[in-house]
Length: 68
Image (cartoon, rainbow, N blue to C red; front, top):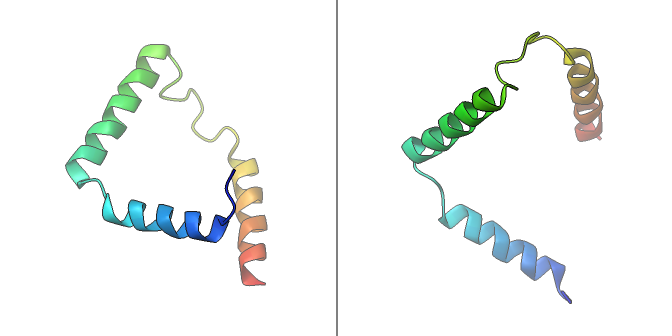
């Protein structure tokens, strides 16, 4: 059981900061994920604007929360 969540969070942040992916490797991962989505038939979306209203609403809520 984790007793000191602050210490764990700090350790995770240090690890993430020290293990950045090079741009080329990150791009290769994204391209592989895109190819997998295409092979599964879920990418590219038939209607790219589908669900944009929900995304806009969530963005407004998050932006309103971050101002407080």
